[in-house]
Each structure stands twice: as structure tokens, then as C-alpha cells.
Image 1 (cartoon, rainbow, N blue to C red):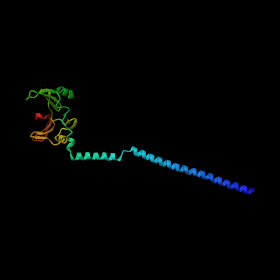
Image 2: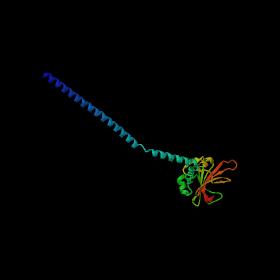
Image 3: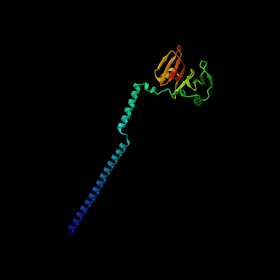
Image 4: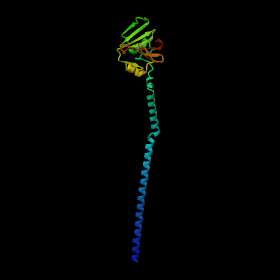
Length: 210
């Protein structure tokens, strides 16, 4: 009888131990599965955050296509960039300036004189430039031969025939004494020596006075 009881206790202990081990194993399996699920969820969340922070691929394509189109348009029409020069001002002087505004911009002139042929013209002489007035307004601006550069609409370019053509394109007029570029009512004329073909002076004036 004692042997039966002892055997029964041993069998019961084995079942109890097996059952507990099974629970531990099940618990471990559940924990491992949960970790995998959490890891996968974290990875998916990270991917979603990265995708959300990146711009759509169509934006890059559209921007590239737009830039490519602009570059193509400029290549097909090289005159497009040159038309930006409207001759609003040369060396900071506009055709709407009066003596006081010119002095305010350039300071006092080296000298003030009258044109020897047209007494109504007043000449304000500055280094490498003369501003000529008629009836209190700018009649024309003369940039003399010694000038190395000039400003066209605030952009500095070399005072050479080639550089002016590069900036303004082909001349609108070709005359015996030079070439002229017209923008609305303003003209920039480059005077050229007929023998040497070198630049002698640059004049900026109204088209109606040509």
C-alpha cells in the first residue's frame, strides 16, 4: 500500500513538473512572439515616418522637368536673357533726371559748360562721362573713350563693342558712324571709328532725338 502511494506521488509530481514546464515554455513562446510583433510594428512605423517625411517623387520629377524646359527654352532662344536690359538707366542716370538728381547721384561735376554749337545745352563733366541737359532735363549721356566699364540697368559690363553686343544682342540700327540698340524710347549708340573700327564713345538718349 505504501509503495502504491509513493508511486502515485511520484507520478503526480512528474505531471505537476511537466505542467509547470509547459507553462513556462508557453509563456516564453508568447513573449518571443510578442517581441517579434512589436519589432515588426516598430519597423513599419519607422518606414511610414520616413516615407511621410520624404517629398513625393512627382515633385522631384516636375521640378526637374520644369528646369529642363527652361534650359531648353533658353538654348532655343538665346536672345531671351538679353531682353532683360531695357535701358532704364546708364551709369545710374535715367532720361528723366534733372541737374539736381544727377548731382545727388554722382556728386558735383568737375565742370559745367555750354555746348559750343548749341548754347541751350549744358554739359556736366564727370570722370569718363558727360551728362548733357536741355531745358533742365537730361538730353543725353556720353561715356567717353577712356571708360573701361559702364553700367546698363545696374549691371556692370566692359565698355567694348563685343561686350555690349553680348549684353544687348544684335544692333537695331547700323549707321556710318556706329551701331545703335533701341529699347522702347531709349537708345544706346556705340560710336565706332570708320578706319580703325574701334569704339570712340557711347551715347544714351531718347529715340525721338536721333
